[in-house]
Image (cartoon, rainbow over all chains, first blue to last red; front, top):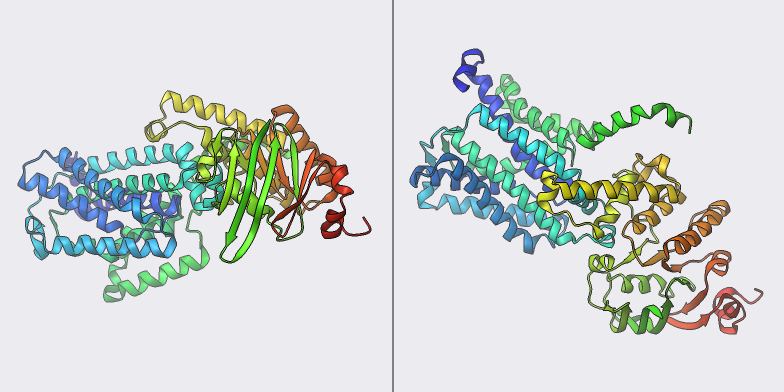
Length: 297
Length: 254
């Protein structure tokens, strides 16, 4: 499939399409934590690196089959998400942001000194098992399951925690437990994206997963629209393409990038797709069907 | 028999004693009112019952549960629903979803059920939708079910809070100033609604309210708080004629 694709599509574009897919998975994980449940996490890249390193070490040094190491990487990130979530999710807003930044830094420094991970040099020669087909199949699965989750008892509870925690508790929602659940599931997706990334890029270094990467992922969620799946997808697409398109302005790239973000936030403070949810689109159709009845009211 | 019993409830915030040895007994299917001037401790009392505050002293007993150290979500799950004085809706969720969230405490679907849409979860969702639509019809918000909660008028938001609390299928409903900000037509409708809820669904209702007309009309028993102390307790007639209540709250010429 990939060989076939590369005959018709320029490898450069194929590469961008792959990165878009991986970023969608990563950003949907962060959307679950920050966009939907409202817990500001600024260390998503830390969980991504856990997945990347775990899967790379397993498949390179222990000869694990690719799918197993990919899954193990995601599980490792989820495990850390779970144990870090329990004490920290009692914190709110700014404090949680600080703790997540700190955690991601600890992970980064750990890998800088981690012998099996090649220390600061990183790891290279990771088998390139991540295929176009695999990435986009996973994107579809993740989007479908995510959409199902958000339109269910637990998904609604996540949104309720974001909207008003006291009222959520008064509705019988165990907020601490559900925040940890959202954090764990989001970290799982970060680890999954990290594993895919490692097995696509051929080589990884600790600085690939620094603070800037976390902020880039957060930008995707915020730009697209907090809590919205279509929004997060759109945000991931735009923010993966934008740096590529700005290559023409060479060293002023980051300047333009920043300015565009500022402009977007001024005109669309709720993100491009605001709170559009898959389920809202369905709802629009439902409304059309009863349109005549509604206007008579 | 009393469903809800408060025994010698005391609440201190630093040096301030917000509630001082308050005793209350609310009978099954009663509409019970709490009145008193601002700062008398009415909302504090609600927050103690629903687990937001832990009382400094005394006991809160609901059926055979001791509520003193229960967390708010646990209190909700054993059947105590509430509304808030300063409205707390999920503003960026639809009216429908606000009520659906309300049923969280009585739902059972877990992570895998929700993510995979297992048969049990589907059945539950269907039942939730039916219940939600019934509740929205009851409070007269069915036609607005797709609106965001923060687009509703004030009186509508208050009714939505009641519907959300009802979604929990509570046996005790706490209403914190349900008529605040309503005009007289809305107040009359609210009275009918409260009666209807109690009579059709056999609930016990405890309410805090400043509108004397409403309180005297619908409550079967009233307790009066002043500076954290209960100064009177009885039927509306008794309260209207109580010397201390007239002095401290109702006003001399009433």
